[in-house]
Length: 285
Image (cartoon, rainbow, N blue to C red):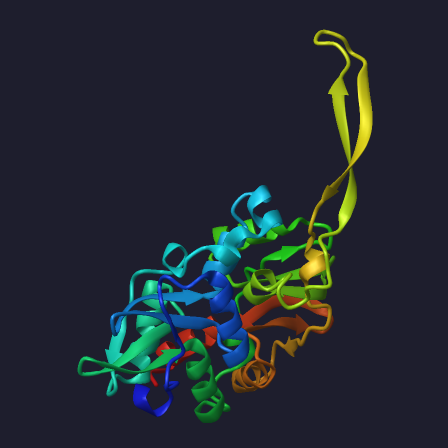
């Protein structure tokens, strides 16, 4: 199968001088997670949910004030653009995404942009053509990133950046109680403007005298967004022995990029669109 059979066209594009707020609105309106940045008719970058979410997490004062909405796209986007031709096969496209740790490729026809192929397009192809070929347990990642309900948003963003992942599971013990994705972070306030950052009491301790032992304790009310504030409490899961094509179908139907994997009631891993892309490469599609 070739790229031109599954690519998305026409593309949703934006200019490098446009503000991030405009990009967010385009993403919501067109239900996409990345935009091609065009300058004078040529692709100069790609802006994704991950780029926005990563910027939101830079420094506590930055994400609390959320000034990123006014930042030009050029300061947030990825400036490297990889392109493939219409006749590129899916296996090669999938391998390029994995090699360069990206989620989309621009598809060109000569000098013109014909479309874009994404991990979502590859996942849809997996669901339609690879049923019965491989199980969830054969593709899933067991190295699952989890946080607790009370972990801070800064910690969640830091974990995503450190691990190079797009989602974390919120868990109580071995039981998943929510999931946080790049979209949830990027649009935490935009899609729910009625919600304000909650204030919580934080206990501080300070010395009364430089050399003295006595300490004064006090509680200060501070804004502190936690995992529980932005997580999605209703999450889909899948059994370890399910067909991986079923996992792909669920991701496409529900507009999600990953499913926590259960063995019985125990959380044992996660399967994502990236895992499906790896499956396409391994199966030689």
